[in-house]
Amino acid sequence: MERMRKILANGKIKALLDRILLCMAGFAVLFTVCMVFEPEGAALYVGISALFMGVLIMAACYGYFKEQDEILEHAADQIREYISGSKDARIECQEEGELYRLFHEVNSLAAILNAHIEKEGREKEFLRNTISDISHQLKTPLAALNIYNGILQGEAEDLPTVREFAGLSEQELERIETLIQNLLKISKFDAGTIMMEKKRKNVSEMMERVRKRFDFRAVQEGKKIVLAGDESSDFDCDCSWLSEAIANIVKNALDHTEEGEFVRIEWKTSVSLLQIAVEDNGSGIHPEDLYFIFKRFYRSRYSKDTQGIGLGLPLAKSIIEAHGGSISVDSELGIGTTFYIYFPYNCT
Image (cartoon, rainbow, N blue to C red; front, side, top):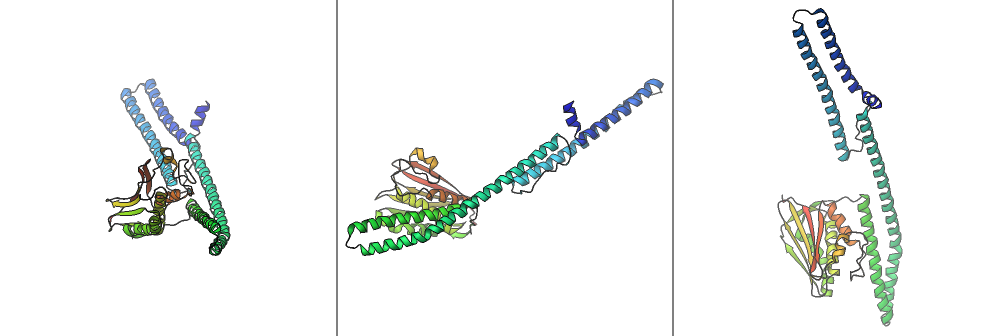
C-alpha cells in the first residue's frame, strides 16, 4: 500500500490510471447493457467498443510516455549544461512523485558540488595570496643578502676561505630566489589567474632562445645542446611561458648529464600534432621514480642532484597542459632520458 501511495503521488500517473479506468468503465457499462437487453448485433457493438477502448488506452499511454520522454530529455539537457560549466542549470521538480524526488536529489547534488567548488576556489585564492605575500616579504631581505654577499666577495680577495664560503652563499641565495619564483608561478596556475597570450611563433626561434639561455653553463660543464627540427614550423602559444617550460626540462637534463654528454631538442609537426622531444644521454631516471617526477617537491633517493628543489618539472607540466598539451617521459638507467611533449597543431 505504501508503494502504491508513492506511485499515485505522481499526478501524471494518477491521471493516466483515471483515463484507463474511465475507458474500462465505459466498456463495462456498454457490455452490461448488451448482456441485459441483448440488442441485435450486440456482439458487433461489444467488439467495436473493445477496439475503441483499446485505442483510447493506447492514446492515453502514448501521451503519457511522450510527456515523460520530454521531461527526461529536458533533465538530460540540464545535466549536460551543468557538466559544460553552467552552474545555474537545474531540473524542474515542482510536482510530486518518485521521478521528481530523483530530480530534487540531482539538484541538491549540483548545489553541493557548487559549494565545494566555491570553497576550493576560496582555498586556492587564499593559498595563492599567502604564497604571494610570503614571497614578496622574502624578496627584500633576499635582495639585501645578495648585496651583502657581493660586498663580502669584493672584500675577500685575499681571504680564500671567506671567498669560498661567499660563493657557496651566492649559490644558496640563487636557489632560494628560484624557489620563490617557482612557488609564485605554480600558485598562480593553481588559482587559475594566469591568462595565456597566444600568438603565432616560430618553433625554431623559441628553441634557439632556450639554447642560448643555457649556452654558458653548457660550455662551462663541457656539454652540448643540439637543436633539430623544421625551421619553418610555427605554433600558436604564449612564447614566454612555453620557453619557460622547455627551459625547465632542459635544466633538468643538464643537471643529470656529465661532461662530454649532450642534450638534444628536436621538434616535428604533422597535420594535427606538434611533438617536441628533449633527449639526453645522462644517468637516466630510476623506474621507481618515473611515476613521481611531476609531483611537487619530489626528491628521488637515487638522484645525485643535491641542488634540485622539485618544482621545475611540475611547473613545466602545468604550462604545457595550459596550452592544451601533454607530457610523458621515457628513461633507462645509464642510457638517458627523453621527455615527449605533444600539442594539438594547426599547420594553417
